[in-house]
View (cartoon, rainbow, N blue to C red):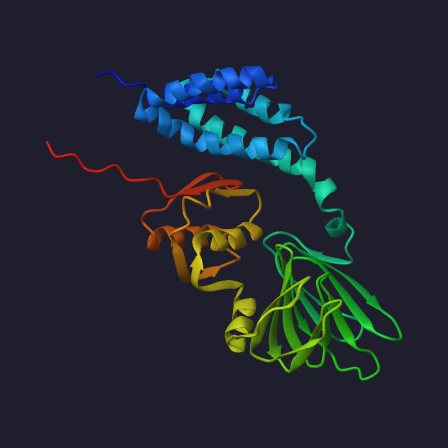
Length: 335
């Protein structure tokens, strides 16, 4: 039986993706029916389409916030469709990367003006330590930003995004306050970390103590070796942490996880690498991770995940476009 060459099938899939991302809704509906039949006709078709379907979902999600114009993305896919099979896969990977970078670049200014205008910031994949005017030390994690306002009455740091490690210099006349939007964290000691994530603030106290104050709620004392998740509804339960391990992880640029869902691990790795890291949360929901992963070398971190979870497939189309999934294995057939 003659089966289409892998490159030919990939080229056919690219043509379908172009049709599926058409501007005309009726044209997209017609293409959807044909695409479903094409995938069902041959397992190789379905395999070739899987990665690009994931990309198409990303394009559809971005289309509305971007103002409805997804022509640059569709043009990138269309440009590679007529090419010869021998070069097709390499061009497909490059075009996919260009597609996502075009979409990402179009949203940067509208989504992150506060980051771009911040007093202090750190790029993706980099950590930066600053000594403030009072002698306090502020370490910004990857893709983080703060504003700093010191005056005669207080020392105020506004965390705009990401995470920071704070070493507070003593000043009896001026309190040191970190404002994360959800809470004002007033330092009564020396060292703690604060992180913004998904509408919450994660406070980890490493030395001494702080007062965490949420508007309309009583202040809560958080002491060394404790962590809490703070939302607009107040300060959450206090959990014990190993403060030394947290400090070591900051120093070594590591992610230390113990029985954490893989999707949350990938969320964190995505924060520390440029480009796009794609994964289907539902597909990998059953995988949990206990590991120490390097945040300053996310390629190595991904390789460690592959080594420990053979069911994972990680496709690095380019350094800026990585896809993670756990494809179902075909049952062996007895003849």
